Image (cartoon, rainbow, N blue to C red):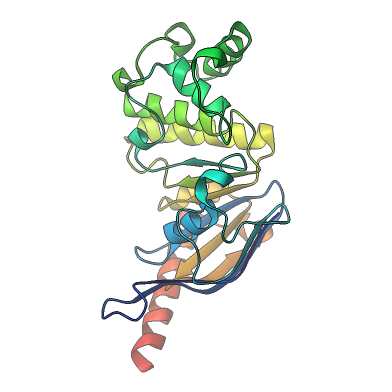
Length: 262
């Protein structure tokens, strides 16, 4: 399904501030797998998602989604294949548009972005049905401006929009990090429900190790732009958040030791 083959990303090549953010990384994600990505700050997690989404092009290597080579395909042309939710709830919606207008844009992802003809009774019924799943009463406020909603409400809408036209791949970039604990828990419950029911291939970055264990079929740990641990489902079944944290710190110490001796 998703194949990242020996991908490298170097920022500012040849300059004094040259940085290798991704270093020869390879990763295969099969269809319908929920992959969770963990790692310290600067480990390359978000850069990896940006490369898959087309925000950046790799310096070297190849990226394919459903056997389509996307390595040099611009971001806007991948929009029909990839749904994405960011850490900041403000990034996934347009504050000045109504809830239903935001969904109309999501319905046209990867195609023509006109609003008027898109908002017919059929589409409004679909939007209302999806909003009702949240249990927040937003199906009765479809013409309310999104900018008037709370961060948790906006992030819930963003997730529904990201999967409104079922994507081939769903990317979640620390999508609960900016929320309070209660809203974070609700958004993760919604995420797991949607991913499970739609059988979506999903890649999620998180610093919350409990979320990683509760949600992922597989966890990969990144450090210095590459994968240093790859934990399959059978290895995760008996693992607690503390066990994963201990493994994380042990890996970090090993990486630092190797770096110091090099």
